[in-house]
Length: 328
Ligand SMILES: *[C@@H]1O[C@H](CO)[C@@H](O)[C@H](O)[C@H]1NC(C)=O
Ligand SMILES: *[C@@H]1O[C@H](CO)[C@@H](O)[C@H](O)[C@H]1NC(C)=O
Ligand SMILES: *[C@@H]1O[C@H](CO)[C@@H](O)[C@H](O)[C@H]1NC(C)=O
Image (cartoon, rainbow, N blue to C red):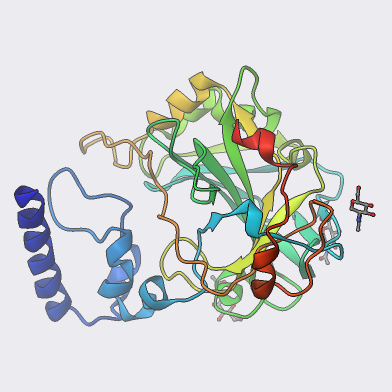
C-alpha cells in the first residue's frame, strides 16, 4: 500500500511540473493520454487524469453527462415511441481500412461507401465515421458499458456523425446532436459474427499487430455485424476518449455479437507500440464507468410496465426480463 502511494506521489509531481511547463491548450497534448500506466518511461495521463492535464478536456473530469455508464436494467424506462434503428448501406458492400491506433482496433469505411443510420432515438441521419473495438485482457472485463455492474469481454462501437447538420466528424463532435454511437457487447462463443470474422481471422488481424499498421478490407456487409434485434437501450452521453465532449447519443443493442476464443486471444496479442518498442498489449482499453447523474436510460424493450417521466419513475422498478439471458 505504501509503495502505491509513493508511485502516485511521483506521478503527481511529474504531472504538476509538466502542466506548469506547457501551455494547457497546447496542440502537443492532443494525443497525450492513455488507458493504463506505462510499464516504463514517462508519465502519460490515465483516465482519472484526462480532465486535469488539458483545459480543453475539462469535461472528462467535471462533465455531468459522461460515458460510459453502468446500465441498471431495473432503472430503465420503456419508451414505446422508440422506433427500430434504420441502417442504410445502399444495399452495397463496403470497403475500408483497419488500423492499429495504438489504443484501439479501428475500421474506417471508404468515403465512396457511405453508410448511415436513422430512426430509433435519432432525429437526423448519421454517417458512419469509424468502428472501434474495446476489449479486455481477461473475459470478465473489456466492455466500456456495464450491464447491472457486469462487464463483457469487449464492446464494438460504431461512431457516426450528423451529416444533415454538419460537414464532417470534427465539426459534429463539438456540436449539439452531433454524434450517434451504436454499441454492441462482445461475447465469446463457438462461432463468430461473420463481419467480425473478416476482421479477426488470423491472416487479417496479424497484419495490424503494431501501432500504425493498416490493412485494407473489401466487400464487407455491415448488415452482418448487427445482431438480429430491433431492441436497444439509449441515453445521452459523451465520447469516451478525450476531449469527452457531451454530444453523443448512445444506442446499445439488446443482443451481443459473438467472436471465438481464438479471435479474442488474437486481439490480446495486438501491441500498443511500434515494433521497435516493447510489446504492450492493447487490451483493457476501456474508460471506467461514469456517474449517471440525472440522466434517463430509455429502451424499446417492452417489459410491460410503462414509465411516465424518467428520473422520478425510478421508484416503480419495472421488471426487466428480455436481457436476462445476456447476463448468463
Ligand atoms: C444514406 O445512405 C444512402 C446510401 O449510401 C444514401 O443513398 C442516402 O442519400 C443517405 N441518406 C442521407 C440522408 O444522406
Ligand atoms: C470540417 O469542417 C469545418 C467547417 O466547415 C472546417 O473548418 C474543417 O477544416 C473541416 N475539418 C476537416 C477535418 O475536414
Ligand atoms: C407491451 O407488452 C404488453 C404485454 O405483452 C402488451 O399488452 C402491450 O401492448 C405492449 N406495449 C407496446 C407499446 O408494445
